[in-house]
Image (cartoon, rainbow, N blue to C red; front, side):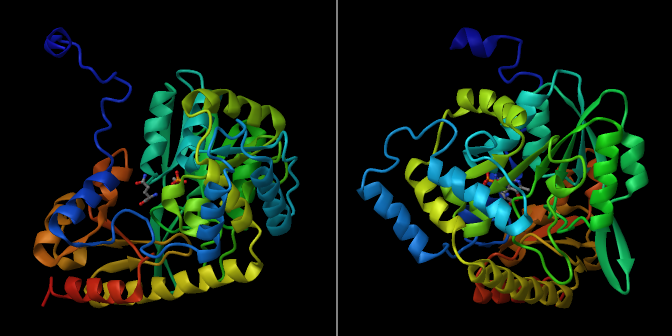
Length: 400
Ligand code: PMP
Ligand code: GLN
């Protein structure tokens, strides 16, 4: 060990040197240490449906999934994923060749990028981006090229939007892949039909692969609709779509995710996935297969519940003096702290537990240029109403 640590060469390879501890772990540890209300890391404080929890218990007791499940995922879950894509979006996938079960969406993202990139390939990602994108692109030796979503105010409501000209201008001869995320974490932006049409046209014209992270597909509000990129012309054969049971069924600890794509794409992702985890979450796969077969009323109720929470937290944040960017999807609200006389989101979030007993996430860590998101702070609203009310009451004390 002495020999290793005294070496001049750093232990962590240089591709990953810029990635320290994820902001979610850092901020959840801060919440645990201080006892603050955790509106940072995105996980619900209420578990998903009781009957689905019971389905997992049943699988465990009956010895289903206690040993390695099949590499691509259990047939019941692959069939349920395919049926869900068909029922919700009219997309038809062969459960045997076009569906792959992964250890959460996180593994799906990593495996897809490790499978599809050669070192030096450029990947265009919507910025601010979910933190694992940058790390996974780096692990694959790719070069990330951010296209920044920017705040716009329409009819008195501020929200983040994609500039299609900037997206087009970002494509070069080295671009291999577009990494899209809709509904978008952390901004809550839901890409519109026009935007998705333009993205699809660009992908076809420049012959790009697309990886689309749609884990918040069931959390869309107001007049927004989730439109999977794979439904657009020319996209079915070039798109890897990623979903997760963590978000849709409020079991983030189970780590069940999935990929749907054409057989060649699924085959490539599977080649990598088999050497990352091989398989995961055996008994939970049975439970998630049942969850995906829940009636539409479950998904409608989830959405209605989260919409009410969005408004509860949004109103509370506004009354506490934050500028609120209205999310049309996800369970996050991005705010600007400038009206509070604050400038630095990271410093603000580090001090927040001490100042008023709340934890949030500084969006600056989701930008290549931290100055771009310097004054943005993200709050999660997948929490009990009393928790959200208590948190915004505490935040109001910042200015009173
Ligand atoms: N993508 C996005 C946009 C996310 O917010 C998350 C959050 N957890 C993930 C992927 C990872 O999902 P999982 O927990 O299924 O790995
Ligand atoms: N996706 C979650 C968030 O954005 C965090 C998941 C994680 O900690 N890896 O808060």
